[in-house]
Image (cartoon, rainbow, N blue to C red; front, side):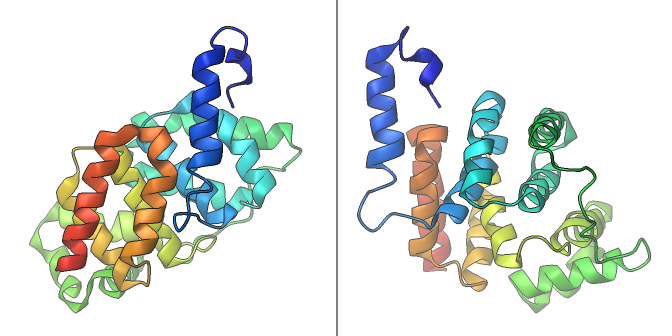
Length: 230
């Protein structure tokens, strides 16, 4: 990733590459299988607005087995947590890399809902993640209704990623952008409800730490611990 800086900033690159690509990756008990690790890093780079690092990470992720469909789903879902203003540069970068690699666009469709049933299906997805109390939560106001129909009905119901993978990348979006600790705690609990336990989530944060730094990583660990206690 840092090859362009090896001549201009050799001391920095020596330490960064050792930390990010050796020490972190090989820390006993904190590793992730490659596809999961690269998915988490891509989502984290979206969350922290690391466009340049995303462009450099993307080929490595694809080479490691993250499919074009999976990357598309990560970028699409990011819109609900980051907004199109922050995601559009990543969509452009992704399309450019896929085109360079000879991938024909658009990719095969992954939608499973219609405009007529997106609310119903989204509400069910919320309940599957957070519990049956969510079956009524959409009625609390228009933003809650949008959350159910748009965020969950339009995106979480898509194929290409499992529900557990979608919750993992959401945790990465929230941890990386910072200032979302209530939502981060809630989604840490949602992850745990789907089988992404505390130890797994700590490993995810650990592998993403070089990309978001210590403050946001430590805040994420605190939220995960809080969710585990509840």
